[in-house]
Image 1 (cartoon, rainbow, N blue to C red):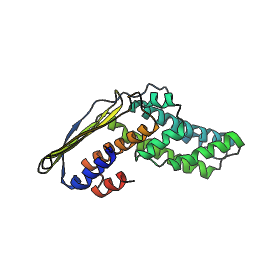
Image 2 (cartoon, rainbow, N blue to C red):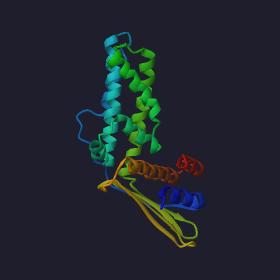
Image 3 (cartoon, rainbow, N blue to C red):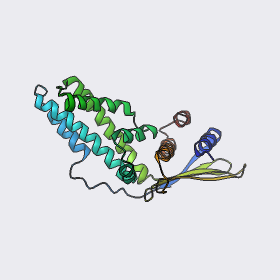
Image 4 (cartoon, rainbow, N blue to C red):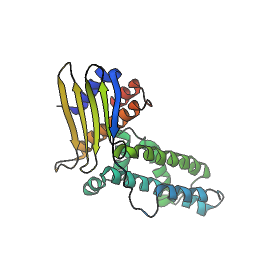
Length: 241
């Protein structure tokens, strides 16, 4: 059974008939880091207050990179994916790739920041103030977007939407494993499906991680749809990407 096809097919048929039913979750347990992504952004902002200083431009670039790395690691720890990435020895590119496949952020924008940092660290080029200011705004947006997604594994980790005429769709993020479970029910057609993507299984690989990203995207989009932030059209377009 192709879980992605089943989920998209169900939503294409029934998304207009979904009604908010409820949800629940638990409190978040943030990583115990001495320095946070917001701290690194503050450092970069102070660096940019002296734009004519080469020292400040170099520091700002480095602090922006640290803000990205810290936010990525914080989010993966909350998702309980950190151990998976460590065991598979997956680096920043793969971490950003997960965010893109999960529909959270375009990694290509942040790859530009990495190229800026590489020119500094490997070719010893002085960054241009205009470049650093643009990427400061980009990293602020990145940190904010990921902060907004964190409740999906905390207070908003469980969602149920009822179907007019009988049935429902529910999504649950089980961080202990980690696992995402999506249940599809339709009374008239007697459809009952419980789909799950569990990365705690011993055979989990990169392909399974990509499936996990799709499940997370579904989990995220349905929460936005339930809250009236996303339209049914947007949800279906994003899921079919």
